[in-house]
Structure formats: structure tokens, C-alpha cells
Image (cartoon, helix red, strand yellow):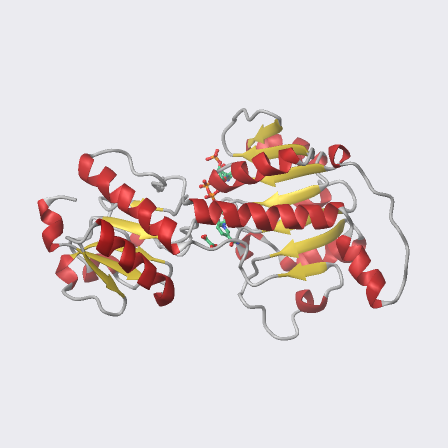
Length: 315
Ligand code: NDP
Ligand code: OXD
């Protein structure tokens, strides 16, 4: 790194087991950095870099010499952007392990929905044998909300199965083989041509509560939902009503609000809901530590940081 790093602490505050692997990578690649795993913070004045999933309170006061703040996940909604010093860059995690995990989860979910697996699970539970006509992938329209590092990677893989793919983002973009839509104006057309909706949006003031009755009503009747964004995107009461009315056919939910759901919550036992405990994708420690080290080099060299959060946009 640079001579200042001889004095610098990199503090890691997330799953300690994965932290041990980060520590090994740092010991090999950047032994001059004093790598520590929370709660072993050492001298707080030496903490120049912090990587956190759940951030500590009062970051600015606690660590007055912080230079870069890293999220150990792709999302950064756990950070209070207003409480972070303006001069400290916040960097979200863009690393191959998270991307590969998300591709696996979304491809699994879309294929399961495409091939009617939830219906066959219900048939099996009541010893019923009733084939459902198999549709071609080309006739199944899969739409992804969010065309960031994860949305685009997921679409690239879904295209290989021959699905009719579409995506929606804030700004217009062109992706080969994907029908793209943008902004509020493009949302209704996007939703109207989507049989399986995948949510891969970040949680911001604009996207909170977006998966609501109005959005469900804009989908073709019987469309399905794969929700891998954040629990607060979804109005669960609206989803339950849309499922019960047949407007939504099936829902795969990896994220909920709160996590976990309280005992007895209707989503736990709904026959058309498939729940997983926020495991769609996980940061892989070795590749994540290498990506962070690369960003430390970029920071030293004055190059743009990969995954830098735009505070104005909130993601
Ligand atoms: P990115 O920041 O790379 O991409 C975000 C995308 O969302 C961009 O395409 C952006 O549009 C779009 N977007 C944001 N706000 C709006 C809006 N108001 N209207 C329309 N489009 C909008 O994020 P990632 O792809 O890395 O991650 C996405 C999210 O996935 C994370 O924030 C997290 O919530 C979730 N996640 C969930 C995991 C799980 O295990 N369940 C694991 C990892 C991530 P534009 O391109 O125009 O800027
Ligand atoms: C993430 C997550 O944001 O795991 O990385 O949800």
C-alpha cells in the first residue's frame, strides 16, 4: 500500500469465521496492514479502513481517521448515509462469489417456476398425479428489476436457457438479447410483459414498498415473483392478497421484513410461498478480501474505486 499503511488498521466487522480467511489473505498480500477482527479494534485512531455488515454506531466519532468504509455485502442499506463523513467513500461489495451465488439461486428459482415444481410438490403432498403442459423457455418472459452487477449477471445466464428476457433500471441501457425499460415511464410496459418477476433492486427511499398491490396488478394474471432484494421492498399484506386472488401464482422469497418472520406469520405456511433465510447469495471471503485489496491499491493510486456508492442515488 503506502507508507501511511504501516500505521493503518483494517477493521473487519462481520462473520468472524469468514474474517479468519480475510485475515489470511491480508497476511499474505498486505502484511504491512494491521488487520483486526471486531471486537479487537486496537487503537481506534489507527482504524483507516472498516469493512462491516452491521456497522458500529457513531462511526465518525469512533474512527476519526477512517479513509474508506466497505460493505461486506452488495447492499448498503444498513448504513446511515447521513451519519457518514462526506469525505469517506462507501464501497459496496462487487465480487465474483456473490455474483455466482445469485446466478445459481435465481436460475434455480426461475427454472423451478418455469417447470411447475411448486405445483408438483403440492400434487405429491396429496398423492395426486397430473402432468402440466410443458411450455418452451422462449415463451416464458422473465423480467429483472435492477440491472446492476447482479441483475445483468443473472440475465446473461437466463438468456442461455432461451427465456424471453427483460430488465428494468433507473437509467436507459442496451443489453444484447434483453428487452430493456427504464424509469417510472417504462415500468408498466415492462411489468405487462413479465411472467416471472425477479427483484434485484437496492433498498432506497424510491424502492421501499415497491412490490405492492399496484405493481402486482400491472403483471399478467398468474405471474410469479422471485424476491432477492430486501424485505422492505415488499408489502407482504399485498402479496398475500395477490396470491389468494390468483393475481400472483407463486412467490419465492429469500428476504422478508423482519428476518426471520415472527412465528405464525402467514408467509411461513402459505402453500404458494417458498421461503429461504436470506441465503440467495453470500460474500465469499477469499474473493471478497482480494477485491477489497484491489480497491485499497486503487485508493492509494487515486483511481476510481470499484463499487463506489453514489450517495445522491443511495446505492
Ligand atoms: P447495483 O447497485 O449494481 O444495481 C442496482 C440496480 O438497480 C441498477 O441497475 C439501478 O439502476 C437499479 N435501480 C436502483 N434504484 C432504482 C430505481 N429507483 N428505479 C429503477 N432502477 C433502480 O446493485 P447489485 O446488482 O450489486 O445488488 C442489487 C441488490 O441485490 C442489493 O442492493 C441487495 O439489496 C440485493 N442482494 C441480495 C442478496 C441476497 O442474498 N438476497 C445478496 C446480494 C445482494 P441504474 O443502473 O440505472 O443505476
Ligand atoms: C448482500 C446480501 O447485500 O447478502 O450482499 O444481502
